[in-house]
Amino acid sequence: MKNKLLINSVFFSLAAISYDHNYATELIYQPVNPNFGGNPLNGTYLLQNAQSQDTHEDPDKPDSLYEQPSALDRFSDSLETRLLNQLLTDVGDGNSGELVTDDFIVQIVDNDGVLTVLITDRSTGDTSEIVVSGLNPTN
Picture 1 (cartoon, rainbow, N blue to C red):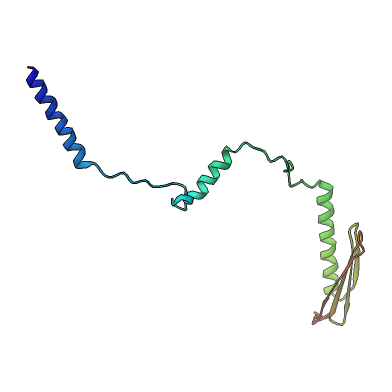
Picture 2: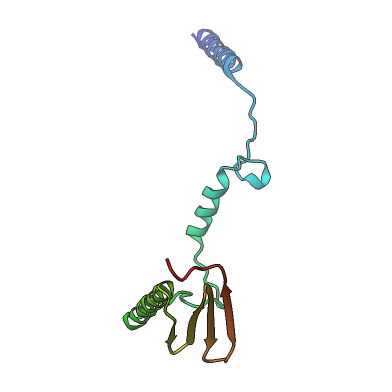
């Protein structure tokens, strides 16, 4: 009986070795990180995982880089944009005009098809002049 068990165990161990040998393949290391030879498409995935796990805060970074403008600021910006648009439309009709705000002064003059835009910064006094020629005042 002991001999029979020994033969069975030897048979099964040989069968297992034979089975593993027939279907075993060589292990090949494939890096994941593109810095070490991995697929470059893994870079974004790895970066997003690292950033999602990062709990450190930069002590020099302000809490928010963007401040939401107030409703009054948005309204003022919208009104200034509308007035500048109207001023440019009037110049297209042959009229000149000026717009004065808290930040700047815009003067637009049309001299026989030569459009001159003079912009003055009220805080610094700097001026910019834009001259556009070739315009026809009679559209």
